[in-house]
Amino acid sequence: MPENKSNDWTIIKILSWTESYFKDHSIDSPRLTAQMLLAHCLGIKQIDLYLQHDRPLQKNELSRFKALIKRRIQNEPVAYIIGEKGFFESDFEVEKGVLIPRPDTETIVEQALKVLNARQKDFKPKTVLELGAGSGAIVVSLAKKNPDHVYYASDISFAALAIAKKNAQKLLPGMMKDKISFFVGDWLSSLKKFPGFDPRFDLVISNPPYIPTGDIQNLQPEIRRFEPMLALDGGRDGLDSFRSILKDVHHYLVPGGTILLEMGFDQKKGVQNILKPYPEYQSIEFIRDLAGHNRVILIKKSID
Ligand SMILES: C[S@@+](CC[C@H](N)C(=O)[O-])C[C@H]1O[C@@H](n2cnc3c(N)ncnc32)[C@H](O)[C@@H]1O
Image 1 (cartoon, helix red, strand yellow):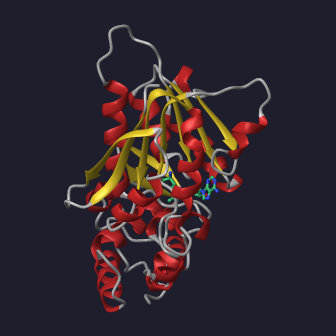
Image 2 (spheres, rainbow, N blue to C red):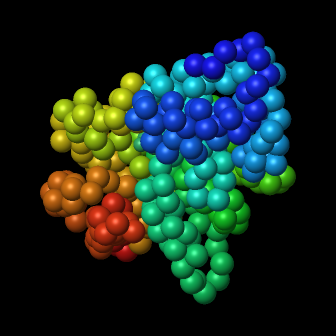
């Protein structure tokens, strides 16, 4: 590690040093990681690192940066270190206790936008519920793109909901800031608790935990050691959440309403088996991601 004492450490020099240090420690994307951490440490944009390439680092900046390097070497994900992750069209605040939104999840957002934008004779706002909202990446992205609909979002984790609310406040414009109603709950069970409230949604969307318990130990340390198990562990076959959600969700959908669920690329058969006993689910379609894997299931509730 570089010494703190001298101001020989210019931005460009420390970037090169950190890149090779990260390479030696098998850190992914070593240059980009070095840039992201240094820009965060100095409170400037990545592009400014190059505009100010010969600026020497102050002693306190150098020791702050060393602390960030150490965290990354100990496998902490960059998103937790810098406190944010880009998803869809926004930067979402994240911290330990909330899943870092994945690029894969943009597939389900795109599908949901198709459902919300489907042509209809007279415009009627649709009611949308996200189950397991985490950082709010899905529901906030939808509300930002389609402000005319009505949004609800829940999670069993108070910590996750607090971050989702913050993201809604930060990313939705003026009048929209309180557009999403957030509530804590175990999948759909909390909806039964509101007497006189008989919700029926046009769209229910979820990216539930779907990793089989036995596979968790094989995940990268970044995920296994830092991300919340509640967001990852889908039980013995990874499908516990699908069983819970699909058992109840038809009670909370309008006739012809839509369910969108993200799933593991190899879970098609398992999900099909779960759906078999439910005549309420009429049309079932598996949607592939850009890599050609089945990653989203789109289900329509029957009309009658
Ligand atoms: C895979 S993460 C998805 C987070 C976010 N929607 C995203 O796509 O980035 C699953 C989320 O489901 C939540 N969750 C787990 N079990 C739940 C339950 N029984 N009821 C409601 N939410 C649950 C977790 O806390 C976590 O935030």
